[in-house]
Length: 143
Image 1 (cartoon, rainbow, N blue to C red):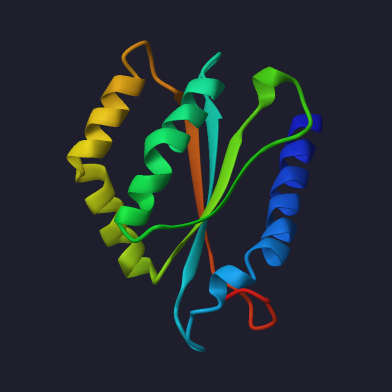
Image 2: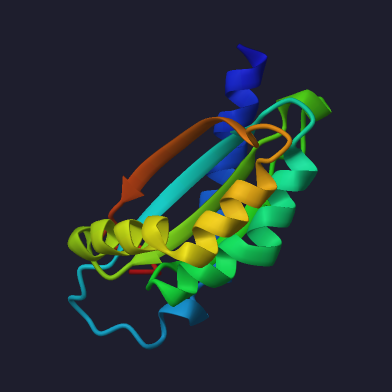
């Protein structure tokens, strides 16, 4: 139960930080754009948090941008034991249709396939991946 509360608090904190941090990231968006956000939470396989972060740092984030997936922010939960750590991140897409297209292109990118295969040569990096799509409210400072 404590673990669930901590994860909920981390998610809420990430969402609050988003409101402050990315106001500038939305500066070029036109009013009425159907932009959608995606909150993703990765539970690393035991002992793989550093390798998972390295893959994002060295390959994934750059390839997201190549395929139209806008990086908004990346976090790790500040509380809990090391074995309870998660990599939590937020990305933006022009629309749900564009999200599906971008993920398909990203998944088929030879550079991604190579980075993925190389990073998992000593075992899978993730135990669980969760994804939630978010639509901003009419009163949200970011849309």
